[in-house]
Every structure is written in C-alpha cells, then in structure tokens.
Length: 164
Image (cartoon, rainbow, N blue to C red):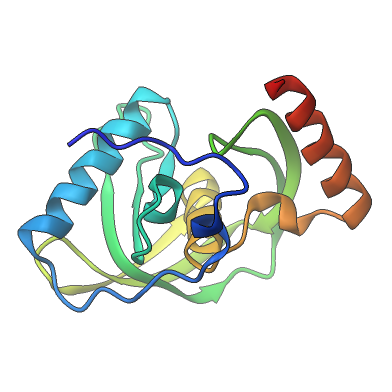
C-alpha cells in the first residue's frame, strides 16, 4: 500500500495516538510503509500520525549506513538526560521550514519491538533527538510547539506562503 505524508494542519497531527496492543501483520505492514516513506524522504524517523495513522508506532534510523532501523510500538521515554543540545529539526508535514530545537542529548526508551517483546534502549545524539521528535508526534505535538508563540506563528506563516 502506498501511504503519503498528511499536510499540516491535518487533525491526526494533533490527536494523541492510540496504544498498540499486539504486533499483527497489519502493524508490520504499516511499519514497512513508514520505513519506505522515511527512506524516500531521507528522514531519520517517522511516526504513524504523520501518515494519518492514529497508532503509537514509530521508526527511527539515524545510522550512517541506513541499516539499523528501530521499529517501535508504544515508545515511552523513561529517562531523559539533563544535558541538552540544540539541533535543526523539520517535518515533511510542514515542508520548507525548520527550526533550532532544544532536546535532551540522551534518552532511555521502552517499546514493543517487531516480535512483540518489550525492549529498553539507551539512545544518544541524533538517535535520541529523532526519538523525542517522534514521541512528540505520537502525543499530538509538532516540533515547532517547542518554540515561542511568536517564532511558531512566524514559521507557520512562512510555510503557508511557500505552499501558495
């Protein structure tokens, strides 16, 4: 199935995604579609709501070889580092704009993997940034929600102008 990025302000991007109770062939197919979209867009992560799917599913691959994708259902950040880093973030849901966002430099996350087993993993650097970005999507937040109202409004206005 071909899935597409839903444009901002699609309501799915503001809704909290539903918990996944088990890994089914349908869930695995959604993950495969998410990976294909992520790879086609040269992103390091994608959350199901970005495709209009209201499930707590995310994929992340910040490896240089693009071969270490994490398939995660119900990812939950258990601990976030007190050390923060600024980094450029963007979203295909609101193209042609980006912003510097402050995120924890490392996180400990628990999630259900593709076999249905619970995993716990420490992520740092771009892996941690991408995971935090995806968890925001699963909670109905966009990266620009981390900006001041003025910066957020200016960015959305700029994006809308470029789409006309």
